Picture 1 (cartoon, rainbow, N blue to C red):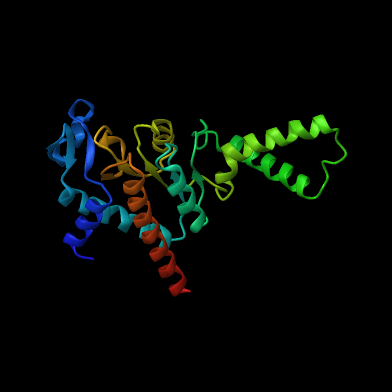
Picture 2 (spheres, rainbow, N blue to C red; picture 1 turned 90 degrees about the horizontal axis):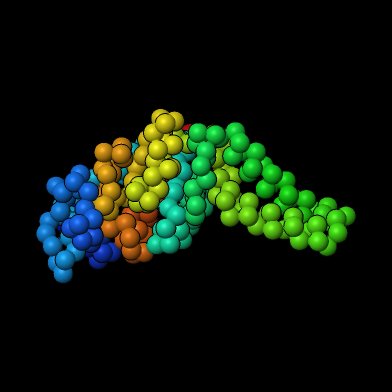
Length: 233
C-alpha cells in the first residue's frame, strides 16, 4: 500500500480528528495540521510513518513468538480490542485494568486460575452439591472474575509488549508496563503524553471507526509476523 493509500484509508476512518486545543498535550503539537470547527486535525502524513514503525515492531514480535497484551477499556475500544486479541489468541483487557496485572503477576494468575477452576466445576456439575443460595453466590463470583480476568487466560507470563488504546486513560497499565520493562505501543490522541510511550501512533483514539482501523492494522501485522514464524519451521 502506498503512502497516499495509507493516508486515504486513515482519513476515511476519521483518524485525523484530535480534540479542542485546550486539551492538547504539548508533545503532540508537531503532529497537528490545523483546526476545523475548533477541533484540531492531525497531519496524517506524520502519522503514517509512526503506524508503519508500530506495525514493523509488532510483526517482529510475532515472528519471534512473543506475547502482546491488547488493552482498551473505553467504550469505543472494547469490542475491537476483544475481537482482535481473540483472533490471535493473545491476552487482553477490554474493561477496567486491575492494578497489579503486571507488578503483582502471581496474584493475578491465582485469580485467573480460580476463575478457570470454578467454571470447570460448574460445567462438570460439581456445584450441584451446594444450596441454591450458595450456587447463586458462586455464579456471581464467576461473573465478576470473568469480567476482570477472562481476557488474561492466555497470559501465562508477563507479556513482551502491550498495545494500548488511549494511554492517558490507561495510565495505570502504562505505568506498570514501564515498571516491568514492557514496551508500550499505543494509539495516542492529542491529549496524550507521547513521551510515556515507546511506539506512539498519533491519531484519533476516541471513535469506533478510527480505533477499529488501527487495531485491524496492528492485528494484520501480527498475523503477518506469525505467518513468517510458521514458514521458518
